[in-house]
Image (tube, rainbow, N blue to C red; front, side):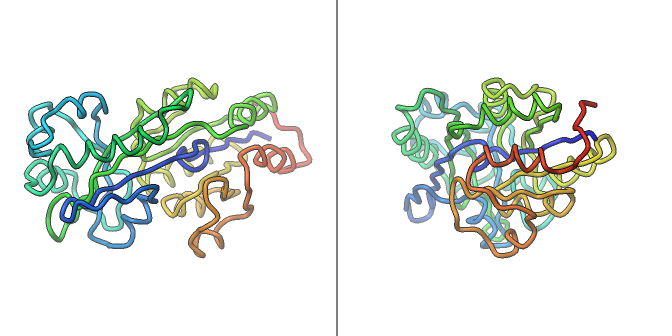
Length: 275
């Protein structure tokens, strides 16, 4: 049989550290789950900015973030949302915002970098949580991560078995490609800026090409993909605090990415062959 395994990135392949800043109060929320923070309010939308951390750090901190994004022609993608909203409406809110300053995002970047700077491989991604009701930027966010111990070996074992591996994540493609290169996953099998519905569609599309499609994730934004997959594996390697709905949708719950390998091996008595 032919098998494909789709991995989320943060919390699944990567040990992640995320920081958000409430732009209204200035409060820093360290090591926060940004997808859960987003899902607490139906009016919130988590977006990823196509901006490099070094460039943001070099900008004037008292400049409006919206002005900086416009001046630098920085685009964005939607990572997580609870109500469907046209991209042009989100763009209008983002690029006309008068709440967030560049300094709000700089504070997030510095907090994440200060925590992860000693790691040998660090990937970082910045964005914002828009609030459709305000409307405007409610939080600036930055996420950084490094591969979990054993992730590279797990991918190599799956490939040796003839299993195709994919990444589908709300993170920027450039960040994911660095991780994919490190892990040995082909870049053309990496899907960035994937919303929950896009992840589910990726799984559904792969089911047309493979006998079995497995989704491995760790957050509520993986729920739709879990429900589409033939097998859903929930990872608790980053955190054991999971929504009950997500746990119920999982066929397996693992504490390490390495535990995915024997599950795939035992999926069928038939030999797994590459497509």
